[in-house]
Length: 231
Image (cartoon, rainbow, N blue to C red):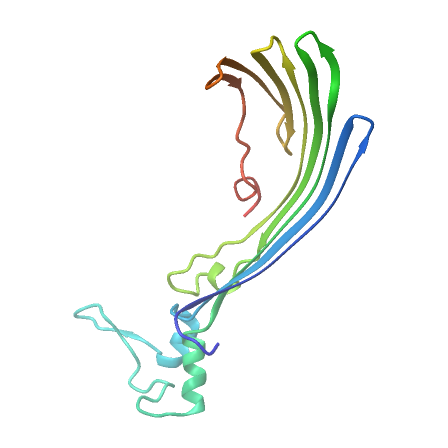
């Protein structure tokens, strides 16, 4: 590369398309979204052991101090400006790159509308779903994986998964001042049992200027793709 040190580049995209409409008193909407990124980290401050040995070796060990001493006549010619020297430096201090690709596709939908009437008012509900496909890939660097790049571990990662969500929610007026919110969400991740998370909420209009709320809910944290993939 034509730089020294570290440089990062990122390319990303995102597209979204959706539809919405009505049938009777019910409304519906659905959308598909896709997003992705390609990131590259370039570094020139790391040493390639093979390239360094080629430029400044062979090395010897001082028997008294144990220090490593470069060759008296290395391939690299100190004080000389030449293409040969430049090529040796490029091998000793190569442009080391770390690349990664991520992609996310989602499809979701929701319908909402009235269910029935109670003495205090209308019970409204909503039902929906979400399907997501995630991928994350970083191939690593072969020289780093083989221990030839100093101060840089060799790592790679390849993960992909599809997750599913369905949910339902209803809001019911119990009295003129008291409202109840009931919801249920089911998440399904690969290699895990489906998780069912309920939620119950109450809202009480104590005064025109004062609203009291209380909610009980359950949830869970699924591992991220980086935590559950291979690498």
